[in-house]
Image (cartoon, rainbow, N blue to C red; front, side, top):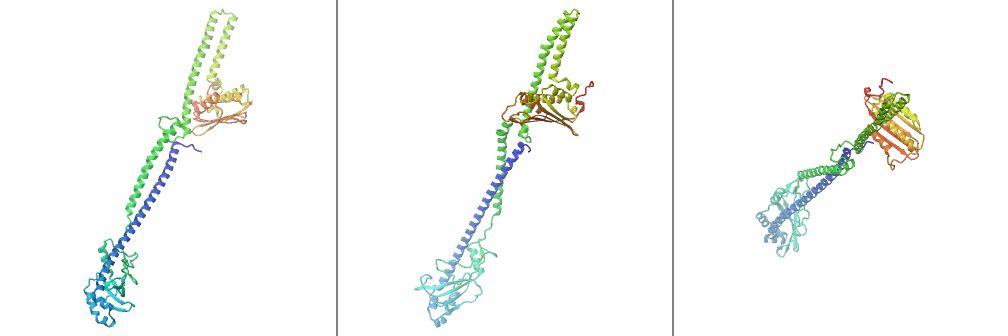
Length: 484
């Protein structure tokens, strides 16, 4: 599984925040649409109320005109007379009708109380009609409480009525697909529309303001985008300041977003190891200087004194040779501590074999590939890693057997080196046991070259693995000693 980098972590946060922002945008957009629909329905209700008010005003006007007609003494006498007198007085009704301004009434028909036809005007080709009962309380026209003597049908002209309604409310328009008005509203029971057949194709149109809706949604989108950018910036800064930097110890250094937490930790660990190795090298150089000062200078001073006192006798020469032999042995010990001489004279493979033979441990070795291609400097680290690991086996594993595997593989560009030191001893729990100087030195040297893996389990032994790549430049190789 690929390690998660800060860039990956930031991308996941961005994705989650984007999903939340999109959800918030969709929620707010849905609320905006619902509000838009509510306002649209409210506008439609107001339009219906305004249309109803216009129709009531028209009805009131019609009632007023009919009231003038049926309240006249000529009309009352006409309705209360018998059939013969009605025919005699019919001309009076016609004269009365000619004096009244109809304002949309194209004709009327009059019927008696039992529904018999009495009188009609011409121009009855329009189907819009309203039926009004003719009732009198005494000599007063009263539909609700009076004595009904007949009824009057009013025929209405579409054009004139619609024009009048548009004068009342200019918002009223003729429509082609709307539901036409079928009935005039009643005025407190005064006008009844029995057998009415209105067909007024009118409405007060309500036009949805989609531009306003689009502007609202665009505004919501802009606000959500701004919130997303601000929150993303703040979250990234918070993650960097309070999580990533404390975990990686980067301080105020620029963050490389493409590196994982593991890589950053390993990088800092390698830097510390490099510092430790530098310090170790300085310590070894000081130790070398101390040894040269304390050992060689002391031996050379003794040798000088012996040479001064030597009288050329065999005993004197023997004493001088003994001092020289001790100095040579001490010099070799110092050199081996810094870099085994066999690495330069015999190479890494034979140096390791000599090391294995010198240990109180049976070592099963498996070497493959060209070990001589390992550059000088790396071969020393490999040697010291294996030596330290085998020393740990002897000290802690409680077993007299171990295996060492070295595999060098060559590619077109570089070499790959794999090292494994393995035993089947008592092992330990890597989670609870703190690494000592030996394991710390092995890990430090391994990570200074490449990567390192330690696997151990109680009762099943320990395995140390090292992986690294190096360039196959033979001019930097080992075993080039001409004396081999």
